[in-house]
Length: 486
Length: 44
Image (tube, rainbow over all chains, first blue to last red; front, side, top):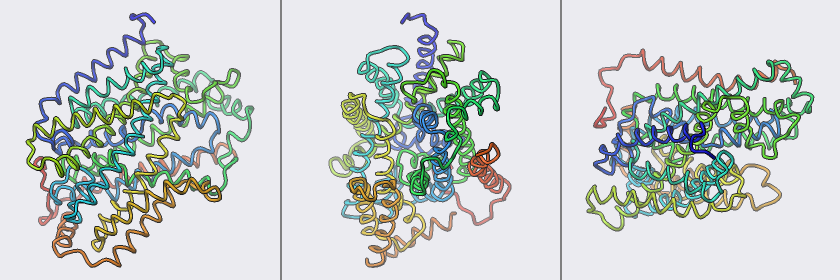
């Protein structure tokens, strides 16, 4: 492909913008708090789009439209579940977590929050949480590298492994150098790009298909099941798709955006911006896939997940196509960078700083943070070298694993002063084990493992906490202090 | 399933935007009580 190709030029410009934004953040990294939490300085809009963009990977532009193209409107239950989950997370977790993490020992990470919330002298909670973050985020980052490889391969004809290394390399550079502030500002830019792309593609596709009625007729002609929300899906299927929303409470890379907000009063504004961004972007992805049923009626795609890419190429000027494809890359990059930084902060703050070098200087900790990003990325790269993995399946394990291990523990810890360290520990172990074991049991595995994982974990938290002795007065006073501020 | 019923499927998601807006406006226009606290961050 010629270097003067509009796609290539647009991409180079896009990468230059990304690096320029990252450059401004470099000099603001003076402490580990700056590097992993941006010094808790995010404005409402930056926190909002950061949470949205780091949540929605290129799954939003590739796999989700692909699912609608393949199955039709019966996939709607998944976006509905996700939207409700994200809303509840902002409504019930964001503000309390922002306040609590600052009052409880200025916790910089989710594992540190658990440690400080329960004043756990044994370090077991922090260690366990940090290890869970590391394992699951490696899967997560690996899935992101797979999709970035497929994207570059499809767009530029690059060999898959080279594509993974090139795309991943760009993410690595700005994440390692710029830290949390860089990824937050870049997320804002990337989130805006994704939003515009998901508005443009379905609208132009609909225009190309001569409006809504001819489009619906064409979809109907492909099969009436495409317009049936309950086709080939039973009650358990609907509940399973809705249950994806439960995952939000336990995703450290999203929760840190709450923790990094300038103060708790910015949360309602951020919530409104994020929910607007999310719902409209999901609509864009849904309609992209849905209209693609009509658009590709005569020449079906061999891989439905490429619908957005082909529509972008077919319907737009090459310069605009370059921007639209940059949006796909954006969605992927914002999620991957957030995952890499979260796992790196677990290595640095929760393991290295806690066990190896308690008196390490801030400069040393930032260095270790950067090294951590590199190590996790290296493992994720090696896992991603097999392109036959399905994006959604890979992410499903990480989403359910984190959601069931951390979600109930986070949620209950913010609202129930009687919760104990042992209750939290039990909840995490039960949640993680359920997610691992549930899919192996053929009679019941039709139900998405996150739902039983979340339920059993919650039950474990309540039961073990009530059997345990009451938390100390110091812990209860801290809880009262947080409630008073709210 | 007709078009009207199809559109109903999108209502729950739109409702979440409306609820978030109401929540935002409620906070934006409610005045701070004299006893309210900041969460005390260096930038708060």
